[in-house]
Image 1 (cartoon, rainbow, N blue to C red):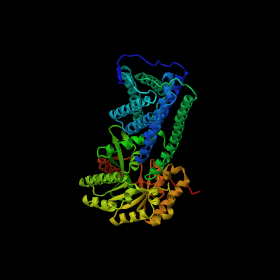
Image 2 (image 1 turned 45 degrees about the vertical axis):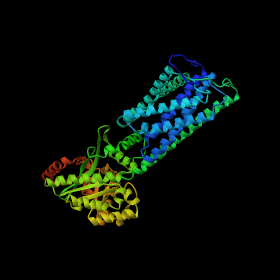
Image 3 (image 1 turned 90 degrees about the horizontal axis):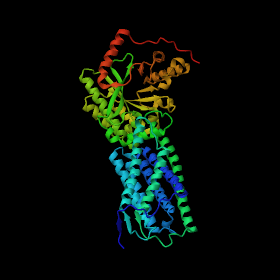
Image 4 (image 1 turned 180 degrees about the vertical axis):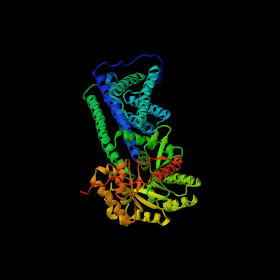
Amino acid sequence: MGIVFDSAWKTSVPFPFDQKTLLYWGVAALVVHICHRLVEQTSSVSDPLGRRVSVSHAAMCIGCLVWALDVVGFFMYPESVMDGFRLSPALSALVMMTVAARLALPALCVSTQVIKVGLAGFGLSFGMVLGHVILTNGVALRLTKINLFALLAAIILALALSVGLALKHRVARLRAFVVEYRPFSWQVKILAGLGIVLLHWVLVNTFSGPFSSVAHAHGASSLTLLVSIMVFGMAVAADQLYNLHSEQSRQKFWSMALSRIRKTPSGSADPLANHQLSLISDRLPTLLTPACMQVFFQPIIKAGREGWHQEALLRIKDDCFGPIDPEVFFLACELKGVTAQVDRMIIGIALDHVCDWRRQGHMQTFISVNLAPETLLASDFPDWLAHNLQRRSLPANLLKLEMTEHGIIASGSKMLAALTALRTIGVGVVMDDFGVGYSSLGVLSALPIVGIKCDRLFVKDVHLNPRRQVLLKHIATLAHELGIMVTAEGVETSEELDMVLASDIHSIQGYYYSAAIAAAEIPAWHLAYLARRDSQGERRPTYQPIPSV
């Protein structure tokens, strides 16, 4: 018997207005909620391996849930329910729905382009509808009639659901970067659940055929099948919801661990930060260009020393997202494994700016650049650095490399060898954020570093805190006795400056003097500072230290 195409709109199965439909509506809304949470969590995973695993798990769960929802939907129509589904079509439908989810999820979770997200939604809806057709063969003996009008309505409804939800998720992801992340409201999920109920009914009327002779056998076996499928779906959902909580905790600790490479972590990661990190990670190929990466410089004032001293600080500006937090950018680089590449780009850009200043006649210029441990530990890094200095005809002593105390100490003997190799070519390393990580006093004498930078923790409101004054004094004394420089960073007020100077620390960095400024403005800033210094003289402490306690 061939397939008959019917273009007239007529329903062979009436819409069921009963309690079973209301129950199915509620289950459909719950499935939408769980699927959205899975896509949401997968979108917030930034590292490639973690995302690959998350996509695989989410696709399997979404495929199983949609399949179970589709199967349960047949029980709303007594004339279509048989005493059991045939195994082969049922499993084939499950595979089809899972594969469709697996192919569509990467674009749904990663891409921010409307076309790609829309195509992913289209592919997902196509796979789900095709899976329903296969599943219908497990109910009907064979398909003999296709209602073209109902088929068109089903396609439109399926596309509206999948593409609409996909685009809404895209908008929510983009909002996370500039405003806040807003997941789907329950009103949206309930409306989507109603759309699924209508879609299932339209699909039942689209594909019809002679149903099994046992189609009306509503015995214990049919009830057992229904309960088994619902229990299966709920078990899958409960397992994935538990896994979501575990994955969020894992991602939080992973991000905190990586953040220690450049700075002390702030303490917690929130969903908004995770989505922002994910967006930046996906956009890294575009961001790693000279048009987006700009190096600013924050002056470091060193009393009694001639020349310009400044720290190179990266600023990221994207046409889509605007200014990007450098710390989040570096964390994304760590997750993508491109940290060493980015650090070398920053060094190259900073050295090019030094060359520009020297061509303008400003020869006494010294800069510091922050690095991650893996950059410095690369076996070819000293040779690469020496080559880039020689190629630009720059002396090695103009460059200092900064690294957090955690990054230096946690790397062990390999870091000691790397620091020694850099000293051999004339480049010194400064320990940044000194005093906020490991208790590193015992290893200072063994490290071939040229300086330390006291974290703002020691400087903030130091004029009101006698204990901090004592700490600053002892740090300065220890550094001088070891023959290394000490810099106080984060100085923001005149009171803080006076206390730092009273502690015999004469290398100052902070907003009191200047925030980070563009490279082109550095010469004018330093000339203005020198003129002001010559007219007013060096700052001297006006506060007397509070007696030690």
